[in-house]
Structure formats: structure tokens, C-alpha cells
Image (cartoon, rainbow, N blue to C red; front, side, top):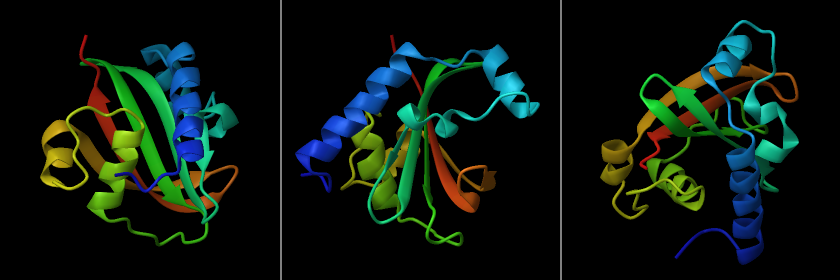
Length: 138
């Protein structure tokens, strides 16, 4: 069972497919950190928005441990938003994170790295975001 409709899942898969073809190298990430490039979520092809204001940005990124999936979830309607681990697990599973069972929330923490951040996005302003990253397995 998923909280997403078939059309939403198709749109999410379109984001994943686009991200697969437009990966961010370490050099790209350094440019983003230096402010010389926009973050992946500012590319509309790498973000999916639900009607309730929830924004999900997804990318493949090269990190010291190798290539990783990176998901950022925020809510433009509520800058103080906090999300339940179950919702994060559902979204991560929809974006192809492996070993994540939304009905066993501990699998999210066992198989991914999760952190919260206060962010400022050019398109949204100040937001709280939850980030999920997972190393890709060959």
C-alpha cells in the first residue's frame, strides 16, 4: 500500500529517471556549496510537488562513499513543519530507496542517513527540510 496515486507514482518515477541522467558530481556539489550553482531542487525536473505544499527534491550525488540517492522533503505552506518518520519512509520508498519499509520505521534509520535542516530556497524562502541519503549499491 502507498499513499500515492498511480499518477503521482508515475510523476515520481519521471523525476528519478531524469535525475539518473543528470547526476551531480563532487565538483558540482562543491559549486553548490560555494554558491556558484543552484541546488538540485531548483531544477523543476528534479522536484515533485503535492497539492498540499509538500515539495520533494531528488538527485543522485557523488559523495566520498560513492554515488548516493538524496531526497529532500519540505512544506512551503508551513516553514516550521515537522514530518513523521512514517511519511518520510513512504516517500523514500516511492523514490526507490532500498530496504525501507514504511510500516517498520526503524528500517528508515537502519538503511539510510536522515537529517533535518533549516534551508532558504530561492523559489520558496525559509523552510525546514528533512533529508534522506542512501549509498547506491552496484
